[in-house]
Length: 152
Ligand code: HEM
Image (cartoon, rainbow, N blue to C red):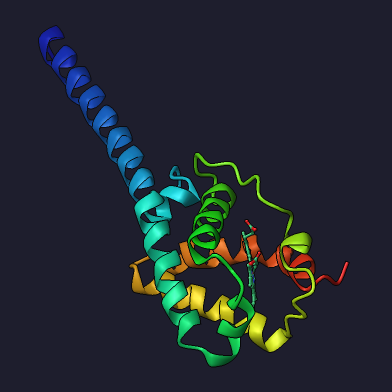
């Protein structure tokens, strides 16, 4: 085998190796392994659409909407969207009241808590958020249950 053909084989081998590594990198990127949860949800526009969608579902639930009777809905929407952005590793910092203070004197029942969480899941599904991203976000909200219900 000539020196030239050994050299060209090496070049081809190196090229194949590099393109395989590059393709693996792209596949990993596309599968979401390197994306933040915030990005997998769809970033700020998706979060705002999800909160809006959630608000319509709450408005249609005669029992749950009662909790929001004295609430400034625009402020709530902004605050909730910031919290979702923060908790999903987005570029926001939630600096509103802690969850136990935000929900004091409400006496939220388990059934109503579950309904709001279900509405949030449906709102995310409606906005095209993948099952795994939905589960990850709900998993991050789950530890707030005790504070929202004021059980601590
Ligand atoms: C994991 C579940 C929940 C999270 C993460 C959450 C988060 C929040 C946040 C961020 C605020 C805004 C706080 C502020 O800036 O003043 C808020 C307010 C509020 N939440 Fe929740 N919430 C949850 C569950 C619920 C449930 C189940 C209900 C009722 C059934 C509820 C009813 C309210 C109401 C009525 C307000 C407005 C309080 C006010 O007018 O000052 N929340 N919540």
